[in-house]
Each structure stands twice: as C-alpha cells, then as structure tokens.
Image 1: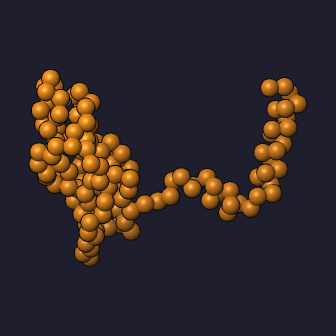
Image 2: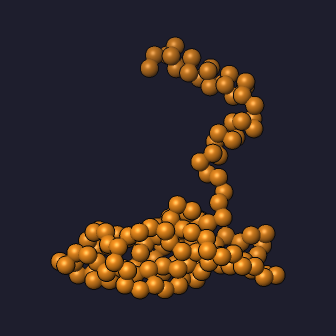
Image 3: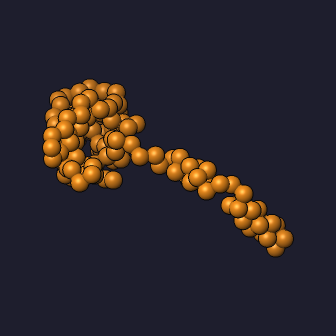
Length: 135
Ligand SMILES: [Zn+2]
C-alpha cells in the first residue's frame, strides 16, 4: 500500500468515527456478542427455569441429533444412555446459577474403534469433567 493510500485509509476511519453516532458504532461492534441466557444457545435447549431466593436452576438439554466420537471422529446417532451434569454458570445479580445439563452417551458407529461408548462433548459450554461453564 502506498503512503497516500494508507493516509487516506486512516483519514476515512477517523471521519467515520467522527460522523457515525457512538451508539450505532457500539451496536455494530457488539452485534455478534449479544448476551444470551444459555452459554451456547446453538447447541442447548432450555427446558425449565426454576428460581429460589438464593439460586436459579436452568434445566438444559442438548439439541444435536448426533455426536462425534472423540477417538475416531466418526459421527453417531445411536444413543446408549442419558445422564445429568451439574454445572455452575455465571452468577446473576450475585445469585448462583446452576445448569442441570442433560447429556447423552452414544455408541460409536465405527466397529474398528476402541471407544465403544462415548459422551457427547460440548466444547463451547463446558470442558469434560469441569464443574463450571467455559464463559
Ligand atoms: Zn469411535
């Protein structure tokens, strides 16, 4: 990029910031990171929200039809069993937020794979064996 083009780019950016109202700029920047109730609404479904004086519990299920085997990376839709994970999410107004996360175990569909049964992974929500969400 030539010196003149670089100078032009800088001045356009400067004038854009000057002319566009601040609220609009901010809306633009945060459009992708809108706060959501669930850590990742693209893979979770809220079944029930329960509140007491000191805590909020969100009963949450996973939405994907299938899951990827962590060993062979093959996909499977054959559910072996279901279980519940208790995970702490970010507190709300100082009150604890608990996720009652209903997850599934799958049969691996690859007969060559050593991993016959695996648990679905939710990398955008919680690490394996973790007690808190990733956010
Ligand atoms: Zn496998």
